[in-house]
Image (tube, rainbow, N blue to C red; front, side):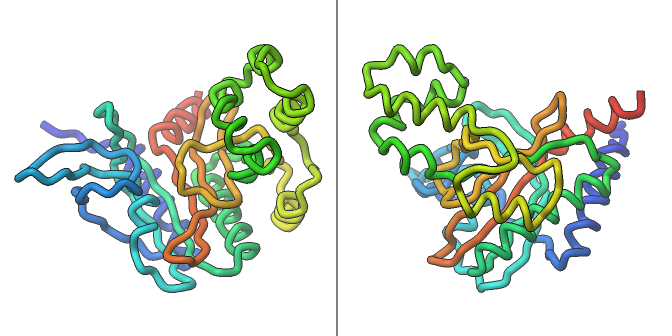
Amino acid sequence: MVFPDLQTYSIIKKLRYSFDSFGYVEIFLNSIEKFNEKLSDGIPFVYNNEFYLINPDITSRLTLKNLKNNTRIFYVYEALNKYNQSTLKAGIELVNNDETASNEEVLRVLINSLESLGIYDFNIDISLSNIFIDRIGKKNYEMVRPYIIDGNIMEIQNLDIDDAIKKEIIDLINGRGKETDIKLLNDLSERVSDPRIIIDTGTIRYMNYYDGLIFEVYSSNYFIGAGGNYRIKNKNACGFSVDIESLAKILKEDKK
């Protein structure tokens, strides 16, 4: 006998209502996509000598679509990676050439969605996708990226690179607060005006389609989700996804 997961049902129902209240429309994509090098995640397989992916990352799929400006969509789907691990996710995507307005709207939808679930204790770290490359160059960034992800400052200090570059890297990793020298991030934080938004120049995302704003949202114990800016056929877009299982764990702990 199959028993319904009432908590998951409740979370998804409330998220759908929240997304809908901002004018977002739910989409349903095919579970199988023909392989494309721009697609991320998903489980690969071969059929009739053709390569396919099962449930690749939604945002990477949308970058290949021809969506109109001012398109607002949301989704709920089972995300799969190449290690056969699955995660139930929900998220939104906004196609809007006004980058400033879309960044602000997406963060407001994220905040509203979590609060609609009764989750208030969280932080959103914001940064830029290309900040390290702009400051230290692509070659240096590719060399130090694993250490940046781990926050391993000791290993960075031991690298055979210019001391000025080391200092720039360490300053970016430690660049966490309410203000920075980056106007876009300062302005966005001021417009949204929520104390849970923190500028963290050490934040990086592994998806290669991000171009501009990136952000991560988390509670004291769980990583909740992430998002940022990207391009769809030369149009600006911004979105996020949240992990349903993490939300369920947070709500379960809050009831204790």
